[in-house]
Length: 230
Image 1 (cartoon, rainbow, N blue to C red):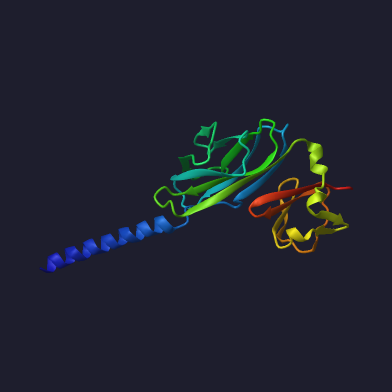
Image 2 (cartoon, helix red, strand yellow):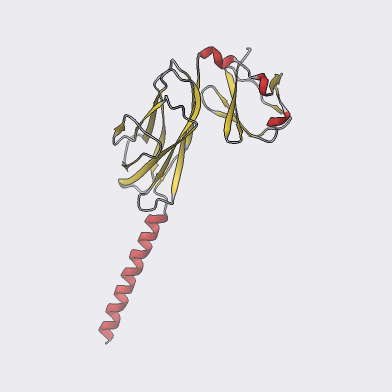
């Protein structure tokens, strides 16, 4: 009887250890991104447009992950490809997904690379990729590739004052219909220089190259573009 008790205790302890290990690997942090979004500002002649986000392995062993793609406001003429550094996918449609290995011990961070053939079509659109462990699909990180594509490089110098945008020195004046909307301001390299809510006027100094003003109006972005006068 005593031996049976010890055996039952051993089984219980092993079950507890296995359960705790499962919880650790299911809910522990397997990977991370230092940056989970990027902005590409191009004109239609700069096609295909491509860039990447870096993914980091946090557990020190090769690990299977899955990506799943979905779009927002992407022109039908654009064709996206994707490279997870396991396999190159020449066409990626909204809803597509695939497994890939997140490698450990690399000399350089692993990259998730998007490329978009623009086919002469300007537009503003975002490609989202959910990244997750296939065993825990409800725990995911969404990375974002934002594309702002103009017809020509000179178009980047235009200000769309018809919808209420005006610069006076370092101050930006907005029309009443835009007040309270989320605003993101980026430089031409895609770096965010301001993010907040639109007030009647905001102090945003010019950059040496120019700025992109991205207004999210009822989930449909309005973009103002300016070239510095310097």
